Image (tube, rainbow, N blue to C red; front, top):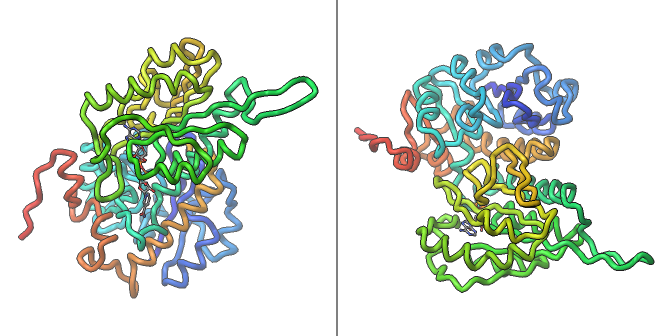
Length: 389
Ligand SMILES: NC(=O)c1ccc[n+]([C@@H]2O[C@H](COP(=O)([O-])OP(=O)(O)OC[C@H]3O[C@@H](n4cnc5c(N)ncnc54)[C@H](O)[C@@H]3O)[C@@H](O)[C@H]2O)c1
């Protein structure tokens, strides 16, 4: 089977779905790789490296789509809400498409993909099981984003992160608060610690307290009833507005004492909860920085504008989109490994395995034969359940 790698088209996107290093691994599994010329260039993988590893270069996007049995991308239409729709014309019945499709985002985009007849697999739907861990692209990208968030904040803050004792006096370390200590949050805590900041973190799931402490962070305990904070898949559960109001009230003091706040709090399929209000921003020291990793999902800070950096009440509020693309070399390396794991599980003896035979294949399958077939996606997008004959 032929796996095709088109160049990413989302504006500013620098990642690539497969790197040269995985080409031989895929070949061993019977998968031949074709790459659109220049696809890896902005991630630091020139065409020649793909060729050296045995991939074939193709001159344009349409040829990559037409010659491939499987197309792998980073941002597919849906996740690419700018110009991803341009690829709809290249999708065809039976073509296998794998990438970020934002299945719980826009019902319209998901249905447009379904109507092309393409068999699409969404990496966001990966089950959180031990076997699927090596295929978990959400975690890979969250790790990169958590690190990158700290680098951006450190660069924006008018202070330095570490304590310094010098002949010119002693500098106190920056105080960084991380709200939401999942994969991205934990990486942010570790990265901020390495730079010498004093780090506190808070999460609605009490289970993460130990993880925060093991990274050298202080876990902020709020007197909130959080017994039901986590679902069976390890994700946070949505809470009611009264809970979020109480949370804001309790978080206010911690935020006002922080030089930098990195927020990552999200709930799958829901708009991110507002945890940092304008009133809290007013109480922060001048020059403080908020980086809202939930910006794409509506934002954790009331004033966040997705894709923009604003200054309000002397506080810089950064709402990055697609932060993982800012470290494209390693983000692509991790994503390519995730996809390679996924592909070698998906294809056996030159055929795509039937979803019934494997939990990972079944749960990530989003569209097939013209329909959105993923039950959870149908439910969240408000589509009627499919009747199986
Ligand atoms: N294969 C696996 O078993 C596997 C893979 C990846 C992640 N995980 C686990 O799943 C969990 C969730 O990880 P994630 O990073 O994908 O989560 P996520 O991106 O869905 O959310 C980020 C964090 O925000 C927190 N949050 C949500 N609402 C909040 C609120 N109101 N206030 C404060 N915090 C709030 C969540 O609890 C979570 O920790 C983690 O414990 C992670 O270790 C397991």
